[in-house]
Length: 192
Length: 175
Image 1 (cartoon, rainbow over the protein chains, first blue to last red):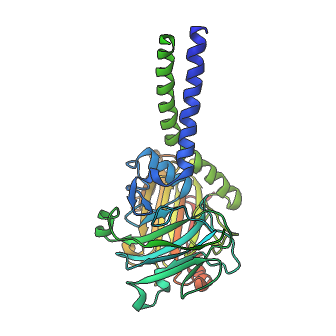
Image 2 (cartoon, one colour; image 1 turned 120 degrees about the vertical axis):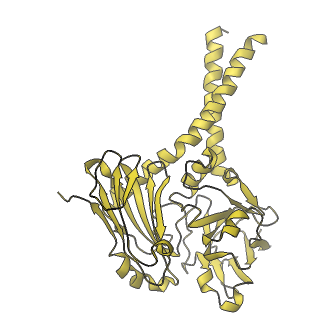
Image 3 (cartoon, each protein chain N blue to C red; image 1 turned 120 degrees about the horizontal axis):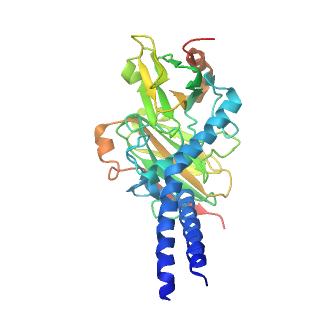
């Protein structure tokens, strides 16, 4: 094969491979956010040029117009606490305690980051909805139909993601975002 | 085989360069597309007070159903823009200004303003603004200003909207 053709072919292959790898990396997971805490992934320096290119790209694709961390931090999960992918074929119990922030919310999205239509229009749970005695020990069901006191609707079998927002996080929470205790995501029964 | 070593090195370097370039360009490309969509829906240099967020009403990826959003896609080509965020008492609210690469050029919330309105003038570096105003220098002409208001309960959306409709963005010098 001619010298120039070899270089040309592999140059094109390399460009395609690199571009494809970046697209797959962005679409498949939150791993590019960089900070791991159980099933949750979060990032540092969101909304600034100091964030890594992978973080900036991931936030643009999966959380465009996100607030910088002095206002809010975002924890995202696409798997349960045992590392299994979140799926509408199963129901889940999410349980947690107080977060060191002004308020928080937990929202369910499809794998592309959009709310999923459901008859009850129930997409999230916010700390404002908790009774004072629940603040340090709360639970929410993720299932097709309402069960306990708090419920987020998951109306079909598709994969889904959870986003936990903590607004006005304390300096302590910001510093310990990779190690602080975050809500557990436990899988319950599944349909076959 | 040795004839392939050089091309293979080129392929690896090209792959790394393409990977990095794709990631680096993504924010600008995605923001540009979002800006065009927002401007097509609501125009630009004006604040659009969005409806209650539902699965049928999502203006951006990963919207929070616990927030009421007002959004202003802006273009400073014709001159600076005044952005005014009116307080919503008893609620978290914030004004964020994003540049065309998704960087935050300005953010303030009710905690910063202690409940008072927040008003800034967005302008590029070469544009002059009156003395005494809060100028936010934007690196380029285009961007998005976003007002968020927390709904303690989604049922209070209409009441909150009365206040947030007093927020606006408009050219500093009206034609």
